[in-house]
Image (tube, rainbow, N blue to C red; front, side, top):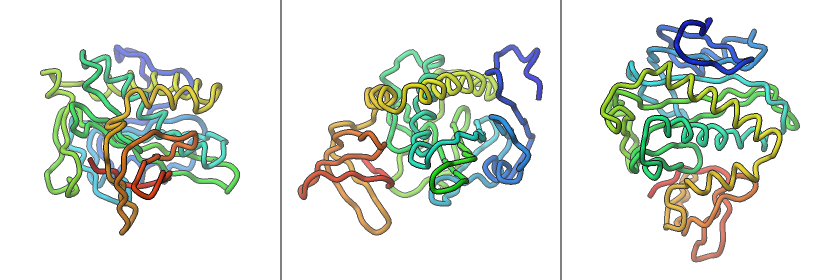
Amino acid sequence: MSTEGQGWHWPAGHDLILLDEVDSTMAEARRRRDITRPTWIVARRQTAGVGRRGRAWGAPEGNLAATLVLAPGCPPATAALYSFVTSFSLYATCLAYVEDREAITLKWPNDVLLNGGKLAGILLESEGTMSEVGRLSIGLGVNLNALPEASVVEPRALMPVTLAEEIGDAVDPLEFLAFFAEHFAHQDRFFRDEGFGPLRSAWLERAARLGDTITARMGAEEISGRFLTVDEDGQLVLETPGGRRAIAAADVFF
């Protein structure tokens, strides 16, 4: 799709596929095997969106449902850090709409919060070998104008919020995406050039509940402890009664 005449800029070298309706943009990304350069797949309506661990993701019309397909050519551990690239880019994008930057926080591992409620979620899927990821799909759902149905909100999860409610006006999903795509392209270049260190420091400055006691759930196991930091590998580090624990993947509850 051409972005000329749309009234917004689009990052050079990135393609845009805009669909009226799809089951999920992540599923569409799997079907499109001919993608050869960074490509955003966006749907005005998504009927069967999926979040982390196969959970349903509500995507009413007016919100943003998108997947970015990349060929990062990096080790799997580095590709996993794109959740931080994505969430920090979302934070930077939201600053164009929200005057109080303190209202926007980042929840490990892959959520963006607005006034303590869930504004956005991120999902990564990678393909490749044990040494190199040849294809990375970054799924993104942002509650811009409408709340998902209560039935798709997991027990104990943070309640969803919308950006429109915060600013008192409707948000154009494609305009928001264009701002975000530019921020992502910038953060991606910086991440590739400088590594995770500077991004990690910036992310921690906006981390939700840093220093507080939180709970990480890994399958049937739950661990509660004080949120100390995110380490150089992107792992959550908790101070627990049994000592420090570094956690690679979990659902986090406050």
